Every structure is written in structure tokens, then in C-alpha cells.
Length: 120
Image (cartoon, rainbow, N blue to C red):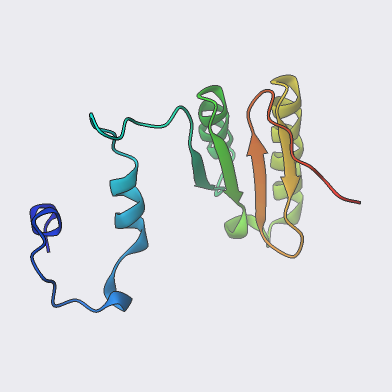
């Protein structure tokens, strides 16, 4: 089913289980005259290597909030701790914030002047 079929209302033979959520999300990011693009976004980044820190920092500079998934590195605890410590320093220098979600492999990273309410 193509984009034009979706726009023109052509019925799909796909079931709802076959719909790819990433395709739906990608369609939402495009702005037009009726719905302009947002001023900032919440974006997911998968942390696989040290170079992905640069991706996170670039998103923060565009005022985007990043949901950072470090699942690929969870078995390399020393490497993961080093990367996250370095990222935390960069984020603090940018006046942003960073917080882990308990019992998950996800960290939320925010740009300047966006703070995360943390409970103790």
C-alpha cells in the first residue's frame, strides 16, 4: 500500500498487526501548510558505539529530547559506563539534563533549559 493509497482512502488488505509503527511515525514528522513541523521533537537513538554520542549531541543542539536506548551495550558494562559518564558531562555543560528510567535500558536526555523531574 503506497502513500497515495493511504491518502486517497484505498482499502488495504493488511491487518492492523502488519502496520509498521515506524512508517506511521515517519509520516507524522513531515510538515506542510496545514500542519507545520514542530519546533522540536522527541527522538530515539540507539547507543551502539562512542560515535552515537555525537548523534545525541547534535539532536540536543536542535533542541530535541532524546530517548537513548543502550541495550546493545548492556553486556559491556565498563564501556557503557564510560560512554554515559562522558555524555553526562557534555549534557551538563550544555545546561541539559539526563536521567535513566528504572528497570530499563533507556536514558532520557534533554536539551538546554529542559529539566527532568526526578524522584528519590
